Length: 307
Image (cartoon, rainbow, N blue to C red):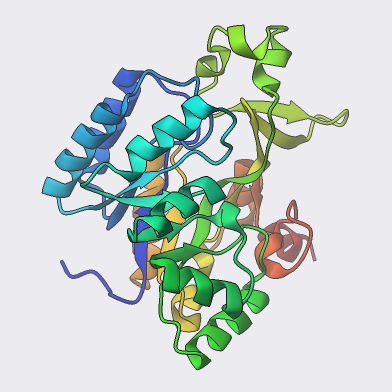
């Protein structure tokens, strides 16, 4: 079964804190999913140490044997010298390309003249910056999660005009990563200090919902990371993405039901997209406002159904 070359699917790094067994089971199944790229590693919190670098490398080798391109994701918020030491080991792994998620990783990789993927947290908004990154060794870049479809289309056109052909990757599914903090919100929820958190975030394999007084899930707390309360789901936009020149649609892993998500996106990029079901989308608590140039919490399918 041939895969269209115009749009690849990637499985982003697991943002939540899972057990070793859950990681192993998840990636054992993912090896057979129709995704071309798999990101591995801890990108959120350095205290999540169940998986060591050697463990990620082992998983990467297994996934490579299954035909996947493997990328190791760096930590987004570096807070200590110990974090820097771990970052250097990650960047110098000698086997897999790195997703640089902060300036520390970018500095180390560019100084070593090593190729890298630019993560969304680097905030690439214009051809001049993308050009600098390309000369530093960037092979692919993630669009900022809040960038609209129209703004991205203009940026891609400007890049092509300047001869910049590094593929762009769009966050197409999952809780949107919005912010990182030196404080751990999940530990605070359990009234524990950050350095003695007892790893309470492992109790929430899809994050801890933060609801408004009206019981609407506004945010998802994930240790030091704040995510959107709803899922962004752009499966009905993948054809448009391919037409405008997006190279990769990124799917953020969830603890349950991820195989169905991947299958739905694979069908969509093949032109086998089902008719949207507004009621089902409302129940699934979907948001796609950023993509359409509106507040991120908006749901365009729900608005269309109610209009």
